[in-house]
Image (cartoon, rainbow, N blue to C red; front, side):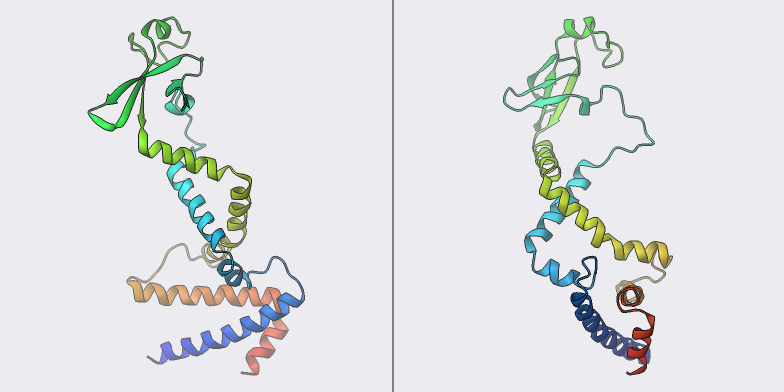
Length: 224
């Protein structure tokens, strides 16, 4: 109980110093300061929604593991033509819509001609089926994935994602790398909240040292 009260007092004092540091930061026009992060994000709800959408994009689409070689002639090598509702293979051959796949309306199968595949120089690698290469499209999921990929590659989205890397990831990177907090030591919501509060306090103090310097920070603590 005593520790909790001391922690609450410390947090209030740090909040006050952070407010003063923010004022100094504004006067010095420090564009890279994180002290203004909360105010900036609160004033830009649209940016918040966009960043969350981009994060979701990365989870949906994923990034190919560079250590794992890409599967030759995987489905990602085939392009989908929405207007014609066909897939086009790397050699330019057409895979036509053959209807529902595996008895599910959410899955549509597309197939190339057997003769075209057998005469292709990649036969045996792309497919070993003499009937031709098959591709299955997950209708709802892939339409969402394609839309999210379009959003992610937009110029505005790339700017916002870069901003996310610069600001939102910095506190967590500092805690994990500089403070060595790769995982929580405590269990349970209350314990994790307490541990995160301590880590956040350490991060805020490091930021205050960067912004106002050690002598000014010590002077403010001594005046409490």
